[in-house]
Length: 322
Image (cartoon, rainbow, N blue to C red; front, side, top):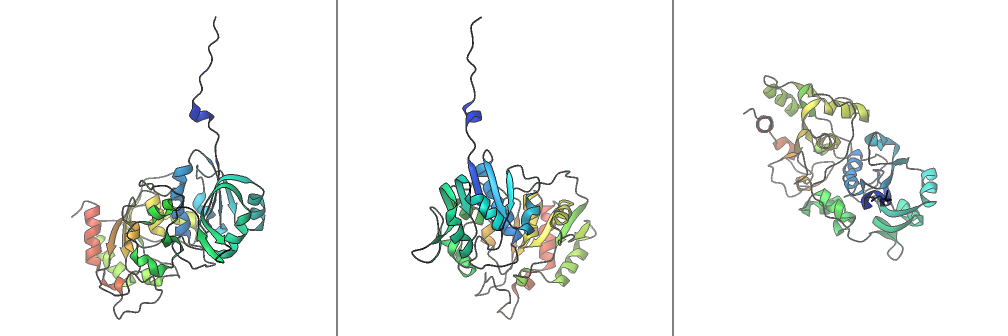
């Protein structure tokens, strides 16, 4: 009998690349500010990049506060927590691609020691003694929030530009095992973080919205936001989330929920074209908007100008109950 040489698929023989991604959340992708409070939403949003490296070996360095976002993520093979031991590990390894999404000067200076064939994102430029961007990253990436009022493309497009790729509608990756059928029609994600309290819609408006909806929908108020996995479980228990521009909005999008986001002081254009979101911006004409300010400078507060009736009508339209 003649010997038949087996034919192997070249894709199966292709060696997996080693990818290193640094995203702790101490700085935000579109903000020059550094904070000890981790921006969990910004960390989650950057998981959009994982679509590019599904067939590779990915090491992701994050903060301890953000590790709950990566539980059971099939595209991260090694999750490391930010710290001196982790830096020693990554500087002893060689990578095919290294992506740094943190703008902290100290982190950028230390990461010069990382060995990689290709580097993307932020690095410390010794000539200008400041942070710079590698390769295709746009000027917006180094700007402060005051310049982001002029951005007309969405954040995912900018994120993909930072690694020299084109965004084609990929969403965030958040894994939750044991997914169950929603038990609430609408979830009110009413609480906002301390960085931008101006993102919040007044509580009296939320209560008025509940009165408008409760005859037709089961409503649940935000739960579990002090524990990230409990928070994810609560969002997953709702069919639709009404929210301000916040972490809850991004979690709901990543879980494939219907999302209605109320925008005031932040730029709603960042979310145009991103999957699973409907946008309801304030109608208030204000020379500062989008201002990204923690305290309103105007006599009229932009979030006050969004009416419960307007939100209720939008909810009914999205749910097909006019």
